Length: 149
Image 1 (tube, rainbow, N blue to C red):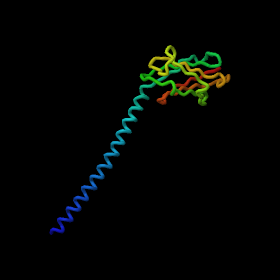
Image 2: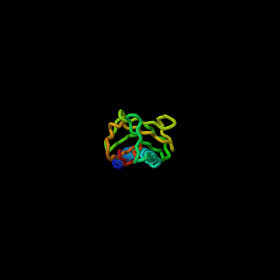
Image 3: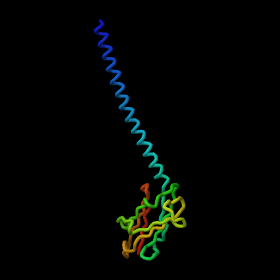
Image 4: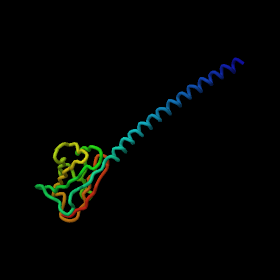
């Protein structure tokens, strides 16, 4: 009988070790999923709070030296970094060398709620004819405007 008791104790100890390992693995995975959910929730919250509107007159695009000038208003509830704004004309990414971005009245790189961003695009990037301008923020929120030069 003592042999049976000893083997039961060994099996019980092995079962406890195995159960502890399973709980450890599961808790690590649950923690990872929880962290991912928090990160996703934060990113989604920023996207929901972000909104922009191109407020330029599509029939009259002004020039500033060798640039065409567009205006975009931050109509959302979050501050944006103008260094993270992407500009596309006719689906083509306009590089930093062909654009100049500045927040009107402040000149800061932080684009706050209600402020207007001046987007200067090199005239060499825009020929005469029909075009489409797309501005995309750091959170993936965008606005598009069709215009003619």
